[in-house]
Amino acid sequence: MQISDRVLNIAASQSIVMTARAKQMKAAGVDVISMSLGEPDMDTPEHIRRAAQEAIDNHWSHYGPVPGLQSLRTAIAARQNNVIGNVIQWEAENTIVSVGAKMAIYNAIQTAVNQGDEVIVPMPSWVSYTEMVKLASGVVVPVQTQFENDYRLTPQELKAALTSRTRLLILCSPNNPTGTVYSKAQLDALVEVLRNYPEVTILSDEIYAGLTYDCDAPSMASFPDIADRLVIINGVSKSYAMTGYRIGWLLTKNRAFLNACIRLQGQQLTCATIIAQKAAETALTGPQKCVEEMRHVFAERRELICRMAADIPGFKFHQPHGAFYIFPDVSAISGGDELAEYLLENAHVAVVPGSAFGCPSCIRLSYAISTEEIAEAMLRIRHAVGNYKH
Image 1 (cartoon, one colour):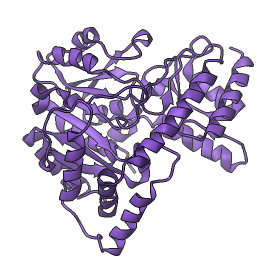
Image 2 (cartoon, rainbow, N blue to C red):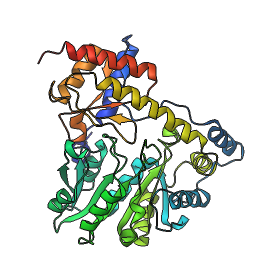
Image 3 (tube, one colour):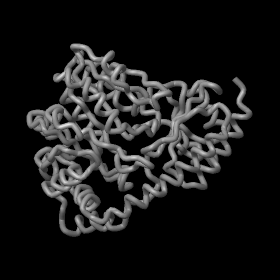
Image 4 (cartoon, rainbow, N blue to C red):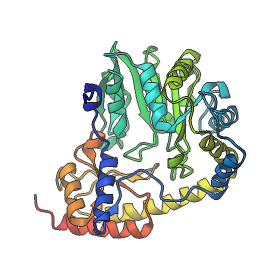
């Protein structure tokens, strides 16, 4: 059968590839520790699981509205109105619920980008942004940020990348893979540049906003004068350990853009799973102690992994302020791809090569695993690096 060029040209997600290889090795009896997947290892909190069970018992088993249940959309708007820095008033009618934040991002890119349009993607970046832009026939404009700036996009870098063909800027804070968090002042400096480019839509991926350490992660909703061209992405996967429920959302004040996303989603999937939507509604409106407890666990793991990474010769990194990754530059040891392969085969630790994120001198290590696994993995990595031969 013929396979379209569109699909053949998509790169595989390296985080998924490395996780699959680790699972295959485990199935073959190899003691592999996987630090490759961005998924909390905790169980979904009990009151949220109970809400999903009650939804089944209460016959939430039919099609729902394409943009999502009204009650969930109301809860999403209320949550966004309470995030750090938010000054834009959001309502249920500004939201659309999708099958995970990944689909919300995909739909936003498909809606915003025509063939040949340029999309600025600060590097390093999440593995799927560039492939989604390609699927929309857009042109990725990668902007390599600098280690010295903690991989934050600077106003100067942004201004140099903007052209008359730029139609979209993608920002992610807290960032995957670096754990970098933009301050309000740093976002303000970027917005100051964007004010001169009113044709550019800003997509702000804030999926890790609930997982920060020793700082806040202000939202791009801090700037009301860009509200008509701002798209905010979030979901329940990371903060509530609900990755398998696949519930994410998009918020925008631009009614035409939202209606276009709804039209696209209506042809795509009809609606996100109703049972999962009811569980997500409980996550947002119920007790939030579980989020703080998970954040505290991740904070402790961050301290452990950073302390042990600092003892590995050749690892150069910034302590992350959000998400659950560290992103060391390993160029003093090897290229990131070569080292990732070496660690999997020799240390039996799966990490993701930095080339997947547009930064081949680095590797990404997820600390969304137990402290025991982190400690053992870092000991293995240190030993393997000590024995590494170029």
